Image: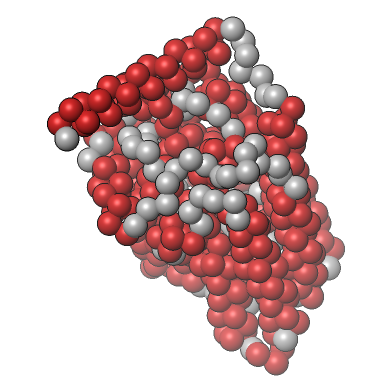
Length: 452
């Protein structure tokens, strides 16, 4: 047994050295270009993600839903709960997804169908609730909208780790930053159009009926988006090489991830950054509230388009840089953008300040998407990336749930100013942590097997 263990360890080390050398040669020779199948899959991925961005923007939880709930009489505490639902509830069911969507030939089909069943009906239900608002009354309508917002996120949350693992398997690390960056840039650009269209329609049609139209259109777009994902062609008959595991083996991989010091440092930095940006839904409240610098609802929604433009730029630039230099630099850039966003929010309100705040928020959010995802992939210290992604998301779920709820309650009691100051301090701490405490995974031998 000792001899066998030694032989297996030698084989593993030889494999790591081989992959490291292959990755070095690939980078040095400039063969990090996509082959025909990878280009085809990247194209369909980008189209699907772009349509998903258009859908999301037309019923944006950060602007459209906030404005609608404000119109129905919601307070800051309910609005603050939006970010908690958006980030926290999405993560809670992910442990279930480890069992439902383990690698196999049927995984892509299950992922697509699950999205279609979870999202489109709930968006249609939101439209029905809006059309029945006069009968239901403002309070019942508010809670119906919150329920229709939370339910699909709860269902889709189960697929998030598997979806991330599937994309990581489709595209090697040498091109992954660009592929995901282009897709999420498409998401952001389409979202820009969606934000501008939604703002224009809300301004032109002052009743609540236009919100029902937006939700019905979003339901149809979500189905078309998933149709493009269904056309992605996997490179092998069998899905990724990660083995199906028992409950005990999965929890062993969870423990293996959490024992890794750099992975723990990465999680701590992300928790600080998440706490520093828990105020994002309150930005719309801040600029649309009574007082000096108050903006009308349509203007706030339209200004939110600057966030989508910045997300596109950040995804493209930081995705490309991450492929070459590693994705830790992207996290540092996002931390700096958070600090700048919150600094702007402390200035007197105006259209220029609103656009600037949303723009730098877009850099922070967009860059964090591509940099966080790739850092998460590359910090996996073992052979089961799906379990690694899941435990990371579970650890982050607590702050994602608690911070926005606390921010909303505090904003209702004390106003948005003190909340922005606290978030500024947390964002500055996150920036310093990424600079001094998190190391680039590509420079550490333990992660070399994740570079293909």
